[in-house]
Image 1 (tube, helix red, strand yellow):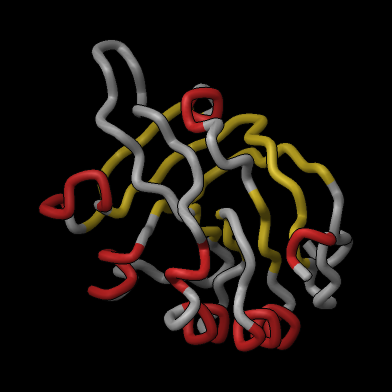
Image 2 (cartoon, rainbow, N blue to C red):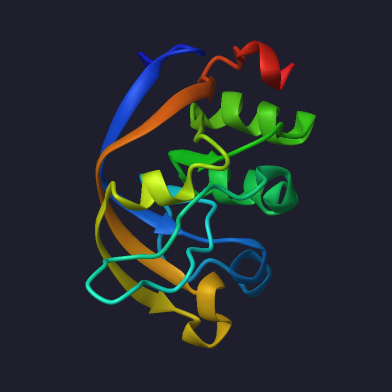
Length: 154
């Protein structure tokens, strides 16, 4: 990820974990080293679908938990909106990446999720932690490992 620059448009493929406010509050229950967290609480899947609408959540709600996760090796986060100065510093220190996904495009983004399973906190419903596999999931590098940001993050 070190070669990414703010503003790069990417298609993400592979494993992501979902986690929002409630899961962060209880503690991320898996080894985050080298992993990516998508801040999303998908709606229930309709019959025959892998997942419901899966648009990004406002990332700043996770900011108080993020520096510690980055220190443990979290590689990337996907969400929407600005990050705090503390998170930006932690991104630089830990050479991580913050990707922005398009807000309001949850139905479209859900079509990029090819599998989904709850791995923790099923009692949280839509905010349960899921392991999802994505194919050609569109995102933009909002903050790169050197702390460069797209204009909307400044």
